[in-house]
Amino acid sequence: MSSDTIASAERELYLTLLNLAKHHPKAFEWLTLLPEWLGAIKDKTNYAHAPEYQAIINKLPKLSAKNVALDSDNLNIEVSFTQAQFKQTEALLQKLAPWRKGPFLIGSDEKQIFIDTEWRSDLKWQRVAAHLSNLDNRRILDVGGGSGYHGWRMAGLGAKTVIIIDPSCLFYHQFMAIRHFIGDFDDFRTHYIPVPLEALPTQSQLFDTVFSMGVLYHRASPFEHLQQLKGQLVKGGELVLETLVVDGDATTVLVPSERYAQMNNVYFLPSIAALTLWLKKAGFTEVRCVDVAVTCFEEQRQTDWMTYHSLQDFLDPNDVSKTIEGYPAPKRATFIAKK
Image (cartoon, rainbow, N blue to C red):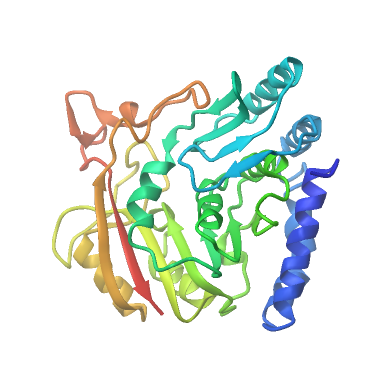
């Protein structure tokens, strides 16, 4: 990787969009907005920690990966650390905590850094990946992609281009830390734009597959979110939607009064039948629910890399089938639909 990981990654993103725009003029709108998007995430008036995070990335040792297993559950990046580099890297990556989505394994032999994230995102990926259309050679948009774990896994399944979007300054820099060690091992197929979905040009129709996992319940206007997702898809493209659900019929929707599982930005938790209806009403076809899973302590928990409250603290200590507020405990469903 070059001496400036972030500048190198951003240059590759620019070139990817420029190449895309040759055949899909809508991508020129993205290119026009790109300087503003990438400038905003570095502005400390927007994000007080931005200069500190950038400094952490710049201090990471310059090493070339011997191998990268994007198809492994731990997302294994094989590099050879000296003892000093190993200690330095572990300390720097810890400064980017809390690490929410992963896990990542960086190093080789006895000098391996295991970033044990709050979420075992590999478990979700196993549930989702089994039902996907072939991702080989596809252009993919990963909405609310966090630090990029699932985006890297998409590249591991052969995607031509993966663009992860998420407005978090911390997640952006966590992605860049992983990119630093992966270098060009994925041929720069995996990119990150630090914006929310609503910042993108509407009706871009640039992507064969769009993922929205763990986002819908944070949206005050769920139908608007579904329309925005649809606008990014090519005709015949595939939507992969994963969200919190509740039991019930097509009229059942939970609207938490204040917090849900200690989250204060949860708006709508539909039943599977209700969300099926929403997707059809939004214009999607071939709608199917392919997986339902109650979130367990193996999948979401406190670790050395995420020391704040986690699932165990969000559930009723006397009845784990309920949240601490008395609502049904988190249950997540994955839907696949076509545009």
